[in-house]
Image (cartoon, rainbow, N blue to C red):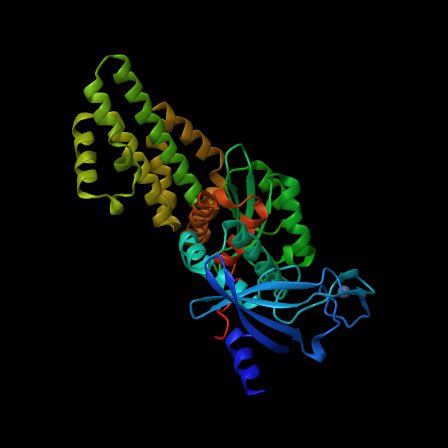
Amino acid sequence: MRAARVWRSLLGVEHTVVEGVDLEPDRDGEVLVARVRPSRSRAGLCGRCGCRCPGYDAGAGRRRWRGLDVGTTRVYLEADAPRVCCAEHGVTGAAVPWARHGSRFTAGFEDTCAWLACSTALSVLSVLLRVSWRSVAAIVVRVVAEAAGRRDRLAGLRRIGIDEISYRKGQRYLLAVVDHDTGRLVWAAKGRNAATLRGFFDALGPERSSQLTHVSADGAEWIHRVVAERAPHAVTCLDAFHVVAWATAALDAVRRGMWNQLRGAGQTTEATALKGTRWALLKNPSNQTGSQRSSVASIAKLNAPLYRAYLLKEQLRAVFETKGQRGHQLLAGWLSWARRCRLPEFVDLARTITRFLPLIRNTLDHGLSNARSEATNTHLRLLTRRAYGYHSPNALIAMAGLTRGGLCPNLPGRS
Ligand SMILES: [Zn+2]
C-alpha cells in the first residue's frame, strides 16, 4: 500500500492505481516500467469529452506512455487501452488520467517539454528529455490546444496590431494579431489575404469587434479594407517599425547601387570597403560597435550621398521616437528633405509615406506601443527561422502561442 503511494508521487500521477513496477533491459541500459490503471472513478470515460460511456472493446491491448525520468532512468507507464462508445464521439480510446488523448507521453512529460520549449533552446530540450524534434512539435500543439480551449484569448481586446509574417521560402505567410496593451499574440492563422483576416473578425464577433478602438498594421491595402468593414469605429495606424523598415531597405538599395557602380568602374578596393559597411549602416547608432561607428564616420567624410541616405533613415526613426506634435513637425521636415534629396530610393519613399500620411499621423497621435509589437514581430520572425523542423504552420502557430500568447504551462508539481 505504502509503496504504491510512493510510486504515485514519484511518477506524478493522480487518480491512478500503480499495480507494479519493474526494470526492463533497453538499448540505453534499463527502463522503468510501471503497470498502472485508472482509478475506478476515472475508468470508462470518453477520451475526447470525459463523459462516462459504455465500453466497446479492448482496443489494441496494452499500451505504453513515456513519463518523466525517475532520477537517471527512463520511465514508461503501461496500461490496457480499451475503447469506449461515446454518444457524441462514437468509438474512441478511453480517457486515461495520466495523459492527453492521443498522446504517447504523460501529461507531466508534455508540460515539462512545453515549458522547456518556451524557455530554452530546442537542441538542449531534445537532449535533456531524449525526444525528437517531431515529437516536440506534436506535444506543443497538444498542450497549446488544451490551454487555448480553457481561456478566451480574445476577451477585452481594445488595441490590436495585425501583422503578416513569412515563414519558409516561397511566399508562405501567417497572419498574426497582437494585443497592444499586453504585448500578447492573441490569434494567428495561415495565409495572408482578406479571407484570413475575416476569419479573425468572425472569431471575435461583431460586438467585440465594435469595441476595438485602435488597429495598427503594415501598408497592405486589404488589411485596411477589412478593418474598415468589420471595425469601422477603430482608428487605423501604420506600425512604426514597418515604416522604419522601408527606410532601412531604401538605404540598403542606395548602398548596393553604389557598390555596383564602383565594381563596374573597376574600383574593387572601394567596392569591398563599401560592402563591409552594410551592418554598420543598418544598425541603430545605440547598438553600433566602436568599429561600426568609425565606419559610419568615414562614410560621412568620403561618401556624401550614402551618408545622406543614412541620415534620412535615422531621422525617420527619430520621428517615431518623438511622436506627438513635435513628431508631426519632424515628419514634415523629413518629407521636404527626402523629396529633394536626389536619391531616387528616398524620393520614392517620400511618395509612399505621403500616400499613407493619414495613417502615419494616427500613429504619431495615438502612440501605440511600438516597442511591444515590434518585439513580438521580431520574436515571431526568429521563431520562423528556428522552425525548419516544423513541418506544418500549425506547429509554428502553437509555438508562438506558447512563447508569446501566454499559453505556457507550469512545470508539473509547481503552481
Ligand atoms: Zn465523447
